[in-house]
View 1 (tube, rainbow, N blue to C red):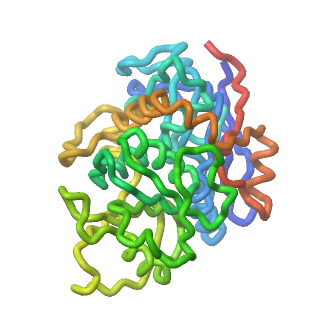
View 2 (view 1 turned 90 degrees about the vertical axis):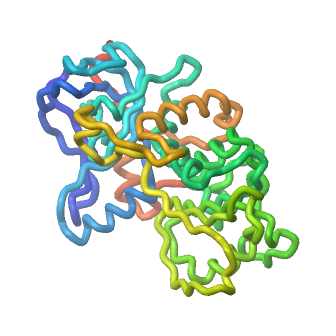
Length: 339
C-alpha cells in the first residue's frame, strides 16, 4: 500500500488544493480505509471555507467517506480487512484516498447497498438524530424546508417512520423528481395549509426572520395529540425573535450534529462511554440505523440526483464561482490497492 495520501485542504486565500503528506502510524483503536468515495457537504463546507479565507489557516475538508478496510489496530472490534465500510468524522473522514478513523466512527455496509448509496448514511445520521429529537410519530404531516442533502435524508428517514411529507425549497432543481413527497410554495400565503403540520424541519443556512411568522401559521396549534407541534432546526439559521403568549404553544428544537458521542475523541476511540437522553442514540448507532433505512427505502435512492467527479473536477468546483450543484456530490478516489 501507499505510505502517503492526499487531502483536499482549504488554504486561506489560495483556495482548495490537494495536500500530500505521509500516513501516520495506525493507532490501536483506529481503522485504516482505502477510500472509494467521499461526499461533499456543501452547506457545512462552504461555511468553513468562508472562515478560512478570513483567517488564512489550513483546514482539511470533508467528513463523509466510504471504502474498504485495509488494516485495523489491535484493539478494534467489529471490522476487519476487506470489509466495506462507511466512515465519518470532521478532520478524520476527509476528502482523501486513505483515511485512519477511530473505531466508533466506522460502520460495515450491508450487502444490498453499493458504496455510492451507503455513503449517504454518514450525513444521514444527522437526519436520524433530528427525527429522534423531534419525537416524530407515525402518521404525522411534516414539512422539510431545504432539500439539500440533509433535507433529502431527513425526508427519507421520516418516510421510514410513516410520516406524510411535504418539502419546500427556493431552488426547484433541489427537489428530486419522482420522490413520494408533496411540494409547498413557501412564498405563497398559507391558505388551506395553515395549521396542517405538526413538525417543520429547517435544513437551511439563512436568516428566517421574515419567514418565521409564516412557519408559525403552518404549525398545528393542537400538536399531534401526544405533544406540541415542533419547529426543528437542523441547519444554521438566524432570526430576530420575540417570544410572547400570542405565539401559542410550540416547541423550538435545535439539533446538533449526528448523535451522542460525536466530536468526543475519547468516545470515538472507545475509551469512554456516553449516556443518551431517552429516545436518542449514539453517533455509531445512528449511522447503522441510517444504513438500515437506506436498505428499506432503496426505491428512494433511484430518484436522488448524483454527480460523481474525479479529484481535478472536485477542485474546480471548490475553487469556482458556482461551487457544487444541488444533490449528491461524490468525489471518486483511486487508492493504490483494495484488499
